[in-house]
Image (cartoon, rainbow, N blue to C red; front, side, top):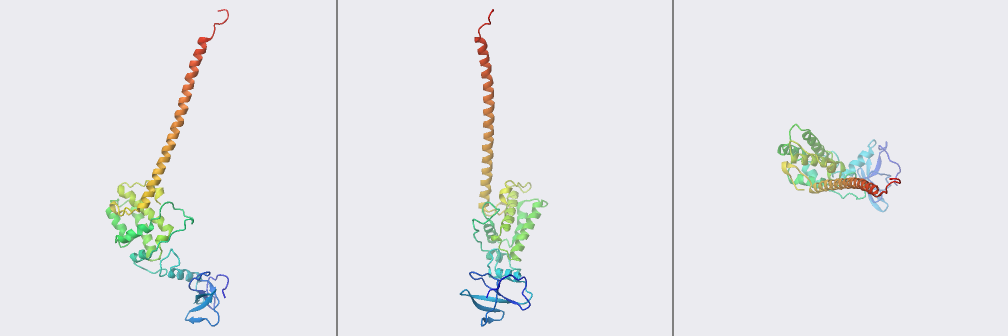
Length: 282
């Protein structure tokens, strides 16, 4: 009943594909419609490996991969997308409420060290009623004391716009995307740097960044990320301190041993001269 191979487009006569996932089969896989199947318009109920499956008829020329992707998004099968399908415009607050975080497999490859902060940050954003990332950007710029001509202002706005468009137009679940975590860490680094001195931001510890709640100047920093960065900086400082102490100990040992040995040899030489008997004939 199942047909092998993957088609890019539905053939001239159309095709039937699985419309909802089963234990051993995924949405979009092609099946032949058995005789006598219960049909209703462009869908049919069939028995597949002792499970009742739903097939969908695709008209000729339909891009199978596009249909499969949008169907999975509509069913909420992809943890990185929001329910309701792609390109469905939704209010920012509704998008945040629809973002259900999933635990990442601890064995899965991940280039990011430290805690994941997207869930905390976005939930804080929603609870504080900013109305969206762009609106929050303008409030942060006004309250933080940052120089309006500093390039961080423009970058902060661009990153905020990227996240808002991804959530409200592309239906992306920001809480489950590593790229969104990286963007949010960059925003948090910028706000931390500016919160200390708006005129002269400090980006110390930037390599570790990429809640105390709302900080001075409207900065929103996840407490877990702040603790992680502080720990990494302390660890690096401790390592540098131990290296410096080791170098100083080596220098002290080398300098003390060499000088003492020289003086010892000098005294020994004088001692041997004093004890040497007079030469014959003297």
